[in-house]
Length: 251
Image (cartoon, rainbow, N blue to C red; front, side, top):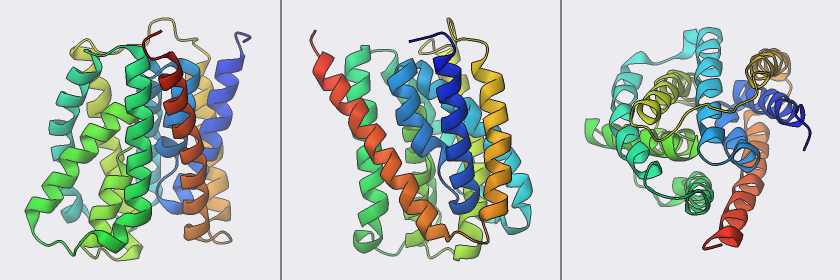
């Protein structure tokens, strides 16, 4: 693979993910996590998507700020830090093949929860379920780059209005991405050594393009269609990561 192939993959992935996230509330972590895991590995790939997803969420939070329910965010966001720590410790203790399997499986489970959770998860009230969603979201975000599925299922069970759901997810992604990167870095379970410098400008450019395109098409593409496309692309990537991990396990 050429030196410029990875930055190009990052550029395209981030454009698509950021666009879908602007329309539906989720997308960059769902799509970018499994794809960058395949190209950069399960540690570096997820760390890159954690950084980019954090920056993307800051920009998207600003653009959707009028619909953010900060009182609901306070019951979830700060507790994501608690979930990041055990995930970072786990990452430091298993090899690449096992981690690929774990990341792929975690993504598929998270996607399954989004698809089927609405039917089987009972209505939730009170602070306890919100805190639990924050901790579990922090764990899955640190491990696999996705917090959205867990928090979305909780939000649906807690009967959040649709008008605030996509917007309130964004500051959750900010603290989730930041805590994931910092815990992995300081606990010695991840870093950016050997990463081509073009990955970062390509990621930032892709993000800006994706958000602008998403803002343009948001009124013409339904949130449900964008959400379905995100889930489909994420499922393919997660399955690929799982199969690659299984094929090299014990090799």
